Length: 485
Image (tube, rainbow, N blue to C red; front, side):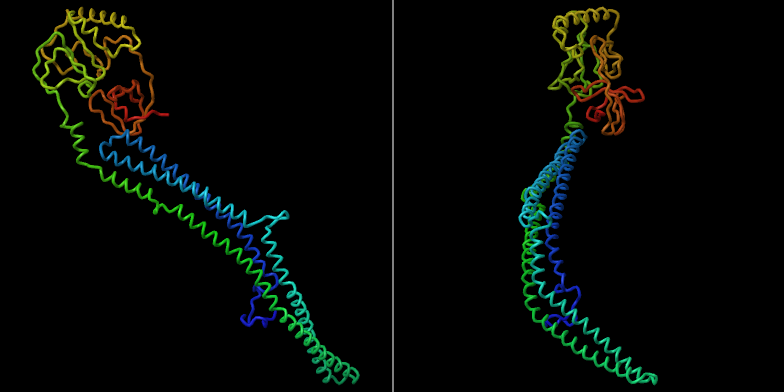
């Protein structure tokens, strides 16, 4: 192909040039690629939205799980509140990421979908209307020039063939002159053929040059028509590129939380909550509630009284409860003995029947009628009174349960000899959340992850009774275990 019709083009013209016949198809294919790129961008945004949703769900589940663990765990005071603020941050950030997911799908995704539908129109026979229009425009612009180019190629072929034939004729003539056996008539034929071939070369050359001139004559119009169609394709592509840039900027705004005021406030609030944690304040609280700062009913001299002759169980000594005043105990100041929910009035003499009848026994069934309770109390008082005759009472209050004839023989202090209607609890398998080391002989010890059996439900002070797999029975804190699902 000749390059004389475009001075701006170099001497060497690539066979892959846009101006070659049929090479416009790359610009036509770009239209189809634009539709595909719209679908690809929608898929990209959709996947990101799914990631945002999954991340938000994971944050919420993480925050919920650790809130429960911290609440049940041993952490206390202002540091516990600071710890909880980290989970609150996760919940708030989770909401923001759900908003991002909604914006990506409801705004960006839908925007691309609608633009694609408006920009590309499908045909009944397949393909897009825009693609067919570009294809027809290029074909129409290229058709006259392609026809002339075909004539040039034919003339060129004929000229090259004539030149080849001329060369062969000259070669034969030269060889025949050196052959003495060749007669003059044959030599004249060879000379005539050389002359004819030279004339053919001149004719084909002239025709070839003329076809090139004709091609050069239509080339400017060809270039103008091709440029017009190409500019139309460029304008269509420019709309798509500008639209993509606009959409990607919208996606960036939706994804960028650094400029979101609410996002900044989350971490400003988190920082303030963490900085409010005060180790000194927590230590002071722990000292007042679990250390030397706790109040104490120090032992004082007490006169012996027949109205009171019993000992305190382990839990009554450790835990504070609703407070049941023991008759016959001298108190000084504002100090008072506190007992667990298992404590009750126990008296022996017959002149205290009215006190026993009015006292509450927590081991009695709640659905018993008043008359039944009274009858049981009368029977109990009679039994105690009869047994009193054969027992001697210590003159001093003792801390040991073995010295009290009415104290429980159970090490836990839970068994009541007067309890007739106690119903057994159902065994429940539980798993330890934390390590626990028993502080007294009737408490269980276990490690986090160990399994045991709960035999009695939690009392008012937060203790449960359970049994280890080795058969040991004892008490443990209720918030140190969880039920096995």
